Length: 373
Image (cartoon, rainbow, N blue to C red; front, side, top):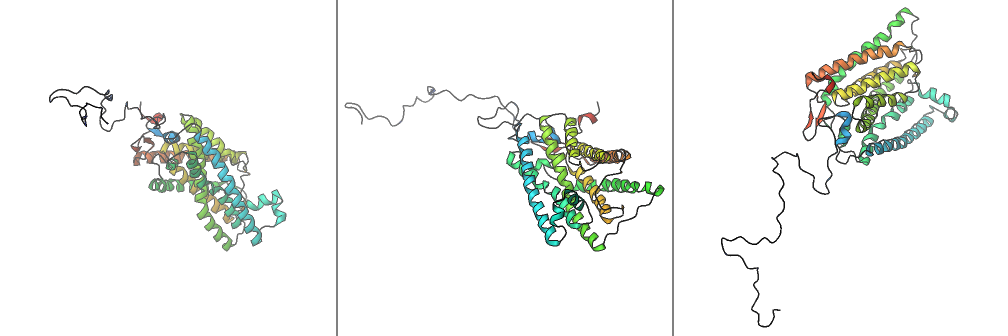
């Protein structure tokens, strides 16, 4: 209510006469420097927004974890820990399923289950389809554990585990299967050469029906088993180490050591052969910006190896590397190097993306050591 003797109050503040400036009521918002459209340089993030992590641009495959908007140094460590937990849980499920199936089918009994030596020998026999399925499935279950661990740890998008394109480059992987097949067939054929100058192998008879079932198991599970190992050792492990170490070589060496430790069932020369292959897989992953070339060689090599072993033509159907000798890792090194060179030249010719430019997707970029100076 207005006071006594006062006229009615105007509903709005008085306006200045036309042509005069109004007195400033509050300070104007400060203006930042002009930024051209599409440019993000010198623009600080708004309060509360998560600034992108410091990472080189373009980014190589082993450093892709650092492109995640929620990246922190501890997230890859959490992802590895969660992967181990998920894998252990699924391993128990698969073991129980095999235990029930083996007992129900009469393939095993409680006496064998309680004898570690007999159990290991039974599971190592690839002519037994049930044992072969368990052997391959126990590794293949790692495949879904990797993206699940990444999701729970906040390392997104999970597609960055595939390649710098954040997806599987299917045409490139299928093309890599061609040199992988040639290299593996020649390597396998040469392994029979010493037999021409020594005692011939006596094939182990395997029933045709049993072999047919084993072939189906191999064709279904070996690609999953081989891909799972690549996503763990050249994917999760390589990218975890690469998130902490900028140079690629320490990540290659450490991931190869971890991969070799996972194959301690072999004797020394067999483990060295595994180390050579693991190092080759890691190098080709880095050089091509993704897992496709490594998966192609791993799948082709394992499919042919399991088919030969399961058929009995090698004189045994039991998985073992005894008697491989010091020549085995040297031969493996030669064929691995041949595959790397073949794929390297093809990747350059086909314009395969090796790194990822932030905000622009994958692009072709040759790693620094191969650039002309």
